[in-house]
Length: 171
Image 1 (cartoon, rainbow, N blue to C red):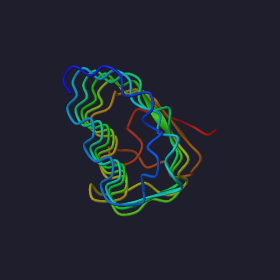
Image 2: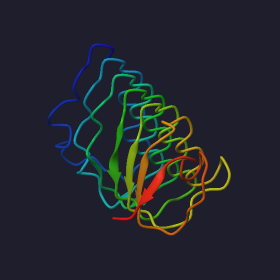
Image 3: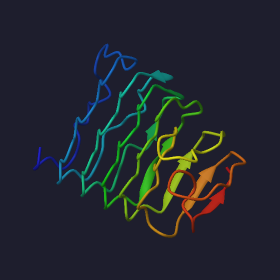
């Protein structure tokens, strides 16, 4: 998929795909280096299964427009792990509607997204304090300055929580 620039427009019209299953969209656009625009992901059900979107956009180095919204509110194990890993052109992450995270649910999600300056997340719980937690290294290697839009009270700083020099804004 090295020449794919835009994800298919009818991506969300998959007719009966059960996103609660395992690895449904895993590595779907893996290393599509020309992909600039991701698909609509607002069709995700409230609960998604293990590795549902694991490494979906892994090293899509030209991705500048991710899905606007990741609509699942309950994540299975590694559901969004490494989803945007190495997407170095990405400046703004999707709105992450997840309020319940499981083991490694968002582990290394934006790891290596060196241009990333803005993420909005509906999760209100505490961030991981280790690399293997629910948000372990989720923001490792992002831009040194940015804003996390977050409703929770945790203000832990670091690659597994809120990046060190990022501000937090409630919404």
